[in-house]
Amino acid sequence: MIEPLFRCPGQQIRPFSHSVGISARCCSLPLQRVMTDFGADHAFGKVPKKLQEHYGIEMPVSTIRTVTENHGQQMNSQRESSTLSVVTGCQQQIVEIDGCMLPIVTTRTDKGDKRKKKILHWKEARLALAHEEGNITPKFDATFGGSVDDAGHSLLNCAVTAGLGINTQIHGVGDGATWIADQMKKRFGSQASYLVDFYHVCEYLGGASKICAANDEKNWMDVQEKRLKNNEHSLVIHDLNPFLEGDEIENSKAPVRSCHRYLSNRTEQLDYKGAIEKNLPIGSGEIESAHRYVIQERLKLSGAWWKSENVEPMLALRVVRGNDQWDEYWRNLAKAS
Image (cartoon, rainbow, N blue to C red; front, side, top):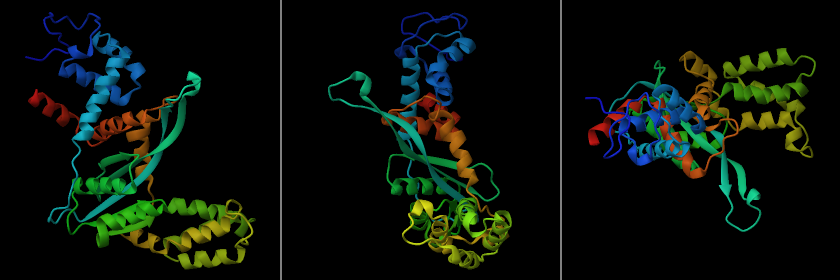
């Protein structure tokens, strides 16, 4: 027998075709799943209409929000820390991690104008992914407001879930943030190599080109990009030297010096030739795209601001969804009920 979508103790089950008002205590597991399905993907304010259209059920936004966030909290609490076991694992993995800023609202408790008690600011969520080379389905993990060590551990979780073993080679790609390179080394040691996103480097070169080759920027850029892909970064740096701005010029107005410093400090992270020869990515577009469909699609809606304590549950919902563990979560709940 299929369990009805909603059941109130001591009440007769009503047909789905009738609109009914239901309290949170009356929500059966299937109804909780329906609300959470919608709440994980859509603004809470839009879910009542969808419930009405699809199931003929009237449900207040507050109940939908509570149920959805409660399941997000459960998913978050069930996250397991992964540790590398002594297994061979897959041969090659690609791992990436990056942050994005989320809109957060906090409320002041001091007395004063109530209209001015809400403080809006931005806080970083970090998304990690890992997958075996050739596998287009990555494993995700996310952290919010934690340390870079927390983010590094989530990256390790992804890699282990994706088949990391003691013989697995790790290919990491990301922007020039030092914490990413540091966590790659800390979590994977000699198994890993790290590459600075090629297109991020080209942004620095593009700024420098306006001074180094004001009348021929395109050709100058083509030459430098080919050199980078051939691991001739020393030649690129050499070409910047004659145009370095003086120390008296502030950094924001010294694109050549910024580019020179950026490349000089990351020469060990510029092995584009090696990556190309192994058919490995030289750009971090995969994690940037994942941010859009895993996190931003739900948590960065126009006009939406979040309380900090509600972000982690929502991230957990999105990660479970992205890792294709949604059905498993609800099956386990059904077995336990």
